[in-house]
Length: 640
Ligand code: ADP
Image 1: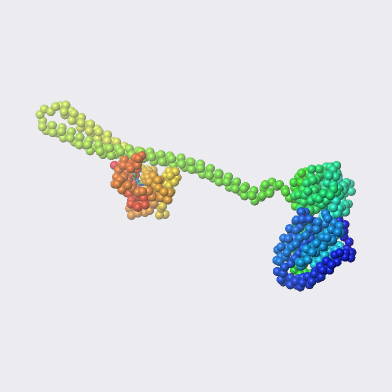
Image 2 (image 1 turned 135 degrees about the vertical axis):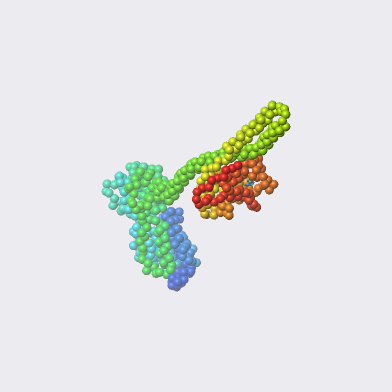
């Protein structure tokens, strides 16, 4: 596309009527618009109509981005309606086409009061303003205009806008920084007027590059020819292009399509000054961000709509250029990271996971460390528990042994008692019989005397044996020591803990808080409490979970120190209650029936007493032990 002349041509007759009508209508609208503008600053709700004229068709990515940015800003303003037209001037040109298009647009928008025209790219600006304004009196804001075009637009009345500098030279210099050994540089462009218009700026930029670099110009060729020429270039030759809308064979192209077509044969990466091409086949460049250009144009449009006079808004220079690169393409061409400028935005970089997601990495790392620590603690804990369980097992075995020994003692005690009485009466009877026979005198058979003597003697011997056995089985007076009742109870609960855990029973120790000392044999007292607690566990193990509770309570009582073992089971069988302390009395299938009787013997040997309590919520067994005297330990009572 060549630059448009600024001079005014006379309007052609064919469109005079439409022009005059439009001018009159626009004049009337202008009056309205001016008064509306006067209110505009205060009355934001007045409906406003904005017509956006794009030079290019809507499928070009830069147009999509610019339109997005523009609409994003305009739609935020209340009461603004946006109308869009794509003039397609790069593909369709000629005075007849433009004339037809003008007429058609005037007719289309005749019934609408336009408040502002936004013209995107030089062709659209010229279309709306030259040779004279298409909608006279309607302000025009332009954008996407290279600064080489701006002088001619800056002079137009009622027109302002944004210009920017296409960073073509900067893009080419960036390419050489990344590929310092390149011996050639290919400049690409299509065959449309718009495409050819970039030839000069590219050549101008190339004149600043090192003189020994071979510049290859590929403009206006068919795509086929372009590819063939590229194939002949030395490997590592970078390519640069601005637009390629139509090739020499008349085929239409978009930027991403061109990049895809070049890829198989290109001798080096493609650089362009368009942000949207990064990620669509280009290695990158010093790029313009057209979304931002659209936003900037939108903000300027809002100022005009709000009533700012166009003459008061100077043409602005957009500053949205920056280095953007596609890491995947740099990698494909073996470009090392150290050549990338420090201020570059590198997209699609595959960072190591800890750099890409630092917080996730830190969290996962912390979780692993925590988990490791936890596993270690659990392992240590498990070992400790095993050691403790082994120790508890030994203690339980010791208590069980004590129980067995106690049972034998208890059994022997009752046997001795039962045998002693008949034995004594046998002896007495034998003695009485011998005396009777001696008193009668006369002939008493010596054999009878001898046998009576034997009965007496053997009876005595049997009595002796029983007495000795009772002496042997007499309960060991115990290793008396001063004990803390709560400590002993705690140990008994620890010994029962494994069984409680297996049966999911909750064990509790409830103390009144003060220290209570007793004198006694620790193992024997442990034996008593363990018996009672195990009975409790057994009593609740078939209960619902909320009743699976066994408590040992310790509190001072009138008679000394009270230890109570309570459970939430079914309580004592009322029919059996009176016999529960009898040796060998049990209501359990595999019970021995010695626990309660041995326990009571031990408690009594400690000077205490033991009895069953009444509790509607389960079973209670009471043990009362004397408080340890202030001076010296008490000796345990000897059992019978
Ligand atoms: P064993 O437990 O071997 O039966 P014990 O002398 O310890 O021997 O208990 C005797 C009986 O007393 C038990 O068979 C049971 O009927 C009753 N008994 C003991 N403790 C409880 C308790 N906590 N709840 C209900 N009954 C109990």
